[in-house]
Structure formats: C-alpha cells, structure tokens
Length: 277
Ligand SMILES: [Mn+2]
Image (tube, rainbow, N blue to C red; front, side, top):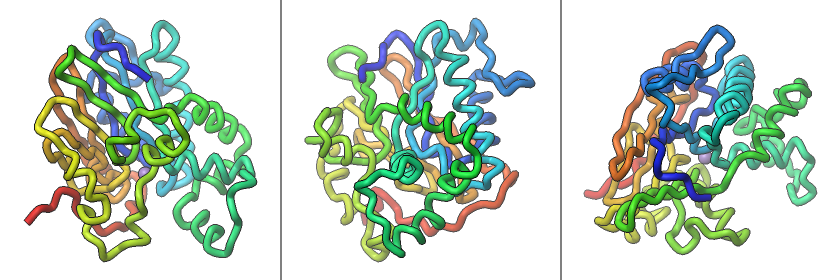
C-alpha cells in the first residue's frame, strides 16, 4: 500500500492500550481531542496523517483497552471522512486476538495456548464479554494493512511494517511475506539469545542509503536506529515511553512521551537491538 507523499506522516509504535500516552503524543503533534475524544482537524494539521504501527491492544487494563479500541474506531471514521489520513498496520497481537475470537480452525488449542491467551492476549477475554467492543475491533481489523510504503523521489522511501523482517519479504504480497512482516522469531522463546543474533538480517541488510524500514514489535528502551533500519517500539506499556517517527518530505524526525502511570505498567526486561560491542 503506497502512501501519498504530499502529506506528512506521524507513525506511532506499539500502543498496547496506552491511550493516555497516545492522546498526549498526538496532542504534541498537533492533534487535540474534544470532549467526545475526537481529534480536531485544524488548518495546521490538515496535511498530517497518522499511522499506527500495530499492536494497539493487549497487555493493558480492560478499562484502557476499551478506551483505546473506542478511540481508534471513532477517530478512524472521523479522520477518514474527507480523505484517507488515519492508517492501521496489523500487529501480531491484532492477528492472534482475531484468530481467537473468530475461532480460527487453524489455531491449535493446547494447555500452552490457553495459558498464552490469558497471559499475552488479555484482549480476547475482554472482547468475549463485550460484544459491542468486539464488533468495533473486528471492523478495525479488516482495515489493517500489512505494510505501507512512502516514496519521496527516487532516493528516499520509508517502508512501514509491525515487525522487523528480511528484505526479501518487505512489501510483498504472498502469504509467507505477510507472516514475516507481522511477526518475527520469538524473543520470549529465545530469552538468552542476543537480539542481534536472533534476527541477524536486520543489521546485515542495513544500508547507508535513504530507503528506510521503520518497525515496532521489539520493545526497546529508546528508539534504535542502525543505518536505514529503525525500531520505534519504546516500551510504553512497560512504563517507558510511547514514540513516533514523523515523515515529512525527505526527512524523518522523532518524538516520545513518557508513560503516565494511569494504569499498572507491565514487566519486561529489554533485550537490546543494535547492541554492537
Ligand atoms: Mn508485536
């Protein structure tokens, strides 16, 4: 999916129910909310678009997850009424929750998968007891794309996916490529392995040109960049910050806002990306 290059993009990393921080970050980027939680369209933000880079659900409290889904749903409708300007990328959490709540027959139910559902995918239980919210989530899920690409002249482009992935799969449309862009090899299943060894392609394929790949998924203590590979998941739900990349013409800048402690933070030990000794 190609993004028109005559607009500016605010690309936001893994929200995981951090609705207060999402609203703060959007406000810092020129989008205030009114009393109905709708983002205000002003002459100043007319040329700005918003991209959520996947994993907007799970890990947070039920109250905050509810607010997050409602906020994204209402603003998705609201902002996209005149032109498309609010985009969603599919994360592995949206995908797994979707598979659980639609009783995907390819999802093998084991004691482990039931434990995972409770531990990692707490949005499933919430949606199962709140049918109206489930309907909103299902509608949003349909709107999620696997990737977006912004192209500004021949020498500058930015590909957006939820997870890091090998170059050969980037922005491709076969089902293997789709899987690779949504989720990479699991860190939690390989806890002692340094991240740079777990996904070696990400730094081996990195180049010093201006064809960037921005992704989230790998919670980090800060924005991590190596050459043209950039991770913007800065662990908001783990009490750190929510970050965005701002793409304007042929420039990328960044902004972050701290966790506001309006809900309990999650626990996580960081496994650092681009940690070259
Ligand atoms: Mn993820």
